[in-house]
Image 1 (cartoon, one colour):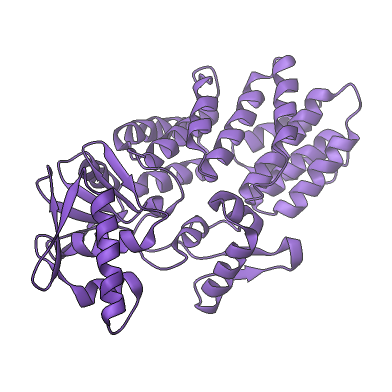
Image 2 (tube, rainbow, N blue to C red; image 1 turned 30 degrees about the vertical axis):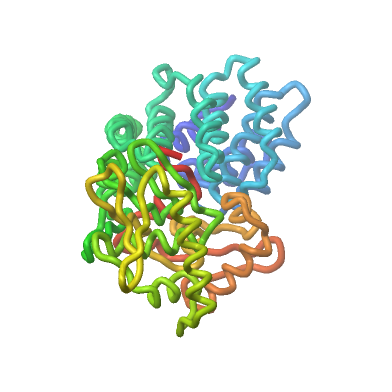
Amino acid sequence: MDSLITAAARALAAGDPLGALDRVALRDDAPALALRGIAMAQLGDLDRAKLLLRRAARAFGPKEAVARARCVVAEAEIALAARDLGWPAKALDAARAVLEEHGDRANAAHARYLEVRRLLLIGRLDEAERRLAGLDPAPFPPASRAVHELVVAGIAMRRLRTGPAQAALVQARQAARQASIPALTAEVESAARILQTPAARLIARGDERPLLLQEVEALLASDALVVDACRHVVRHAGIAVSLATRPVLFALARTLGEAWPADVPRDMLVARAFGAKHADESHRARLRVEIGRLRAVLRKLASVSATKRGFALAPRHAGEVVVLARPIEEPHAAVLALLADGESWSSSALALALDASQRTVQRALDSLAAGGKAQGFGRGRARRWMTPPLPGFTTTLLLPAPLPID
């Protein structure tokens, strides 16, 4: 490898893409094409970067399997940055195997981190943890150690384990400082701000206040009966009753929880559960049926008793009843949460992350665009969607991932 290629590679490792381009911008040999592609990716021109890396992979000879594998890993990283979550994971896995076979442990580990970050984005936390468990970051450069700790922190935050998340972020900050890469340092600081930003709302006894992630974690571990509107679950002392597929029952449970210890008039319950402006006898009859079903599913956690004007919720063992609500509540909050990372998403990637049909996601995007909350650009399969970061709170509890007792 000649001196210019070596110098360009060192510049890229230090986060200096312009310095790398100064050295190889006019060269079209395979190593220069690969380095130019990585430089363009660091500068944000992802389409140009992909083309350069593919040219480089074709230009490397049949005996340069390691170089081609590195190009595949770089292209996978670009796909992740572009939120192209449908990029073939098998190609990355094969490239990682080649790198491991030839002793390139650092790039093989980087390929593994890309796999884990993709799994984290689409909410497959168990699989992400299993793949991460086999990686020891100690022998790797500071940048790789910072990425490792960022992934550990991301998984911990999604699981509401704020203690391990804070510890991982401390390690990530130290490694990023040693790496001296401004973009990496900014990513660490952005992740750290999540722990200091309201993530949910607590509704109790008619009052409402924002909660940080660590406060949400403490609430779920407390003696309170929690009507969890983030996952449509009623929780207490390790018992979780999911009402995610029974929206009428959850609407009743939430309305009763918000009013606790007071009761709720029948007309209000009818309006919240059925969307009826005026309650007639058929609505009241249906309400009695649904209240009976709610009593049955919550029998281990609470009772629902009739009062003169309506119904009241009474916990069996908990000291109080609270409602844990999302930081924002609108029909397409989960889509907004994914878009709020500031990256451009395709509708297919959003559908994969949300485990929903692409048509459902497209309707949600059209609705958000009509309201000025999302913006699409490009056409056809190249169309991407973005929105500015949501101000004032973190979107962790809007994302489609399990909470600790699930």
